[in-house]
Image 1 (cartoon, rainbow, N blue to C red):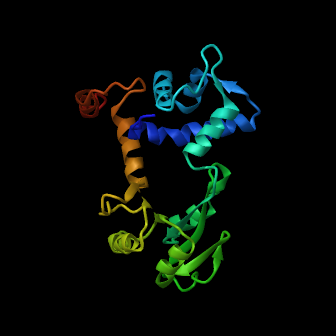
Image 2: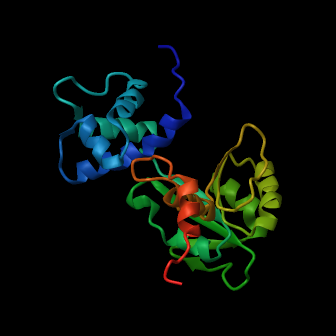
Length: 231
């Protein structure tokens, strides 16, 4: 069978589909249609069918999709049939929130080690996760066979720590810092900038209508400039 190249946009939607399948399975549903999935995840039916088509015949015409078999398929596809350990670097306010987040509730992922420079928390266990000194980074990552890291450190230290991770052999970084770190081509970085996402949301609220059409900037300026006739 020829290798099929999956578009990045499709790959990003796969965990969303997997989560909905888990929900259906927990609700004891046995089948669903692309229209059902479209309504739940807010992705149009044609896109969903196209995404699924990359993996062959996943459904049956006139029946839809079988929840149990498709859940098992996506579990294998997303490597959710075994536990994946990741490390957290930086246990500040955001880091603590990430430690408290129960990844395993919806994914077979676990933060198994965290690292920080604060002597008050290193050597302790926070939310069931041991906090190590940064000096132990290489030893623990290699010992625990961790090759995925969540980066939640001050921006000025992000590149320096990333360079160290590259030397250790990390394959993937989920970057919560505002800095777009530089890495070799064989290492994947996903950037999560909460401030940027919020700013984007505000921009869309201010400049686009509910149907997606652009609000007339001139109309907004004219409305703001309208004189008060009561003066």
